[in-house]
Length: 158
Image (cartoon, rainbow, N blue to C red; front, side, top):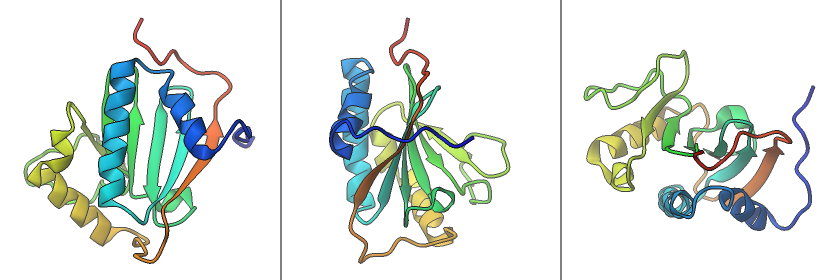
């Protein structure tokens, strides 16, 4: 069974804004600022948005293939994480990355300074260098709504 098709309720930016509006104003604002930082760091990324059952996910990829995505920002009602989608084999001498799966690692974004932390920047640069498909500097940034789950957990803490 394939994922539900996104509706045509406005532009992708408007749709993303409506997804963020489901969160508390503080979490939505924090997420918007994190996305601005990621867009500055990855100006040529294709952004793929998944408004899933458990979380809102914004993936950053060199193309429109989800399997080639390198990073994602994941929003839950009480926390946000930066996922390294090809991160299991990244060297992590400072043990900053969490997770034990075969592919993905993550770091909790307690605040925006995590994205500027020198150790995290090194990990991000290494992830970009080791990516299955590299970012194309000629690619224009693009925002795509990939899926919207009909059933979702509440986006605000109860």
